[in-house]
Image (cartoon, rainbow, N blue to C red; front, top):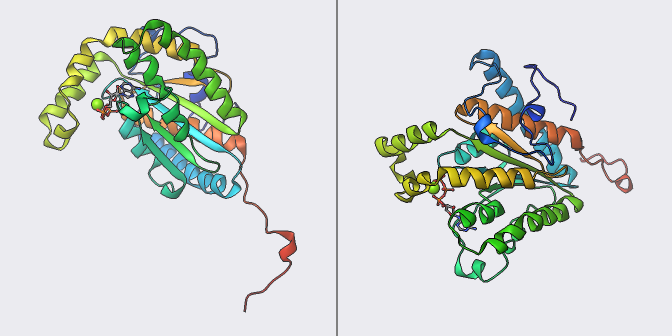
Length: 277
Ligand code: ATP
Ligand code: MG
């Protein structure tokens, strides 16, 4: 992807999981800042990217030709909510749908695992954000043995086929794994216990999940490696520093939208020249 690089960094190149490549999260520094510091230049670039995203989203909506699906996955406290808030703030809410995938309901469980996901896929002209996603069905489901291995093993191919269907039908898919370290998670969980404004975010179950960190890491590595495709790539975003995470994610989304070059449709020629009096 050709990228304008005011900071001299292609976040796309730096963080993409190349299709077919294996993933070792132990080798990705969750505190990576690409040599940047949180200074005025970085803040100006973030403001510029936000303004550009706002403009691109308006054009994308008016153009009405494609959809954009953004998938966010992370360990608990990884920053999915914060990313949505930071990246989408300033964008016209009418063009954005956020879907948070929770433990499936009885009705959802009575269907195939992609049923609830397909229903939430963004319509033409919309940006759809998945806060968790169909990947939970090869993550939490795998780690907790919620279905037999032969069932979840088939899901990588099923997910790739499903995403291929969406991209063939005009959806652009960008998938972000927000990568925090285990130490950073400890800090953030502690904050949820200590800060009254964050108590509501603390779930006792999060501590149990934390004990399964290595199992989740193995599950993520396989999902990222097997399901990063040309049309629906995964990005591993270092996310210990919120400002870096927001910068990288926003930059990658802006570049993907720019590549589509959405344009405002012209006036219908049959309307002719009209002057409203
Ligand atoms: P936060 O990170 O702010 O705590 P959250 O995304 O964890 O937000 P919660 O309501 O705390 O939101 O948790 C949602 C739960 O639903 C997660 O534990 C997730 O693993 C679970 N979940 C999502 N999809 C599935 C699925 N397909 N099968 C089983 N559990 C699922
Ligand atoms: Mg949670």
